[in-house]
Length: 152
Image (tube, rainbow, N blue to C red):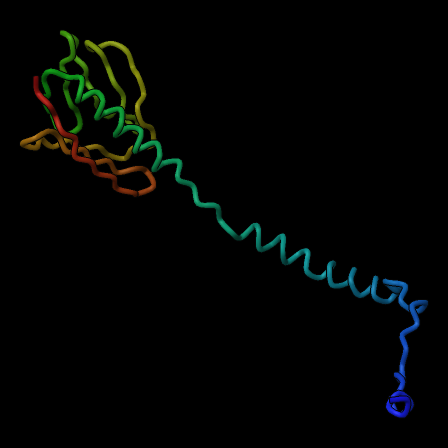
């Protein structure tokens, strides 16, 4: 056994812990130059990425919710013309129609409650079970919804 220990080779290289001191000035300069070269491209790429906005879509869906609630609470429903819908609730005459780029609500011909802005056109069509609403937004998007009318 003693012979086996004598035949073993010792390591030819031993690391000296004193020579590993971290960053050198040259590595710092290389890091800073790489950072200085890539930062303009990173900021440029963030500017070119366009954030998707769903604001118009959410506002149209909210309008459809408001319209659905109005139709559900109504006892009568009539479409006066393709741009206007008439609802009767508790002896109140509620009109929802387009005025310019705005869809607004009037009660008994008075008031001006804005329901939706940025509307190119609105069209209401009667259905056997309710009303079909079609909205074309100023950005060109088309939204449609069928709303069920529950007569009393």
